[in-house]
Image 1 (cartoon, rainbow, N blue to C red):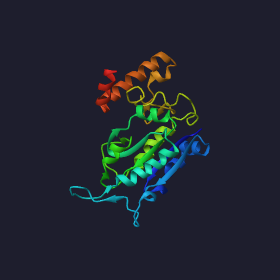
Image 2 (cartoon, rainbow, N blue to C red):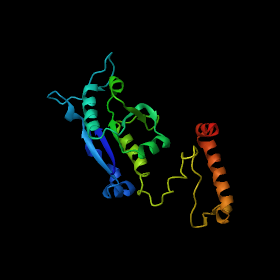
Image 3 (cartoon, one colour):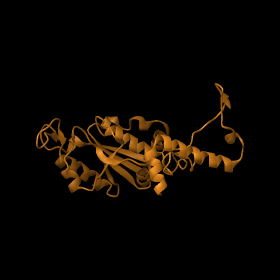
Length: 231
């Protein structure tokens, strides 16, 4: 049974988008994963197919309605009750490699793409939904975030990457950024590949890579190095 993604969105034409290409596209063609889009407006009950309304208490913008979104979520839960429901929102938990691995190991995921000023908070109180953010910035909608989440999960599915170990020594897998990479030519613009990587001594290479991973993480992401020390 393939890993299935349900995407609840006002813009289903955005999918699969870039996921139709490269590794994810080939995996989709091979049936390793499948994709179903759900048009949220199909669950609106008024003649205008309204999915939003003005914010309680006043303010700019519009807020996505809990009743319409709940109906859409209930629809996908009937089809795939085991798949967790994720809501892409800047108010969510940070998307991490740990969460990505957990989602990739399951039956799939249902992703709600937020829009406008946000989602009526009562939806999160009434349904089991994991709010997730891909970074400390605001996008026009959750669709771009959904593509990021899906790509991160799909590449980890069995049979997607060429080698089973391809995803093991990567940034964030061990709590650190990945060590730097080099390839031919040995010399380029007066710069050479570090001698240790040309030594053939696997123990020295492993030690160098670990040291560089820690050094680069310390200089670029000190928040990660602090967490790594606590592990």
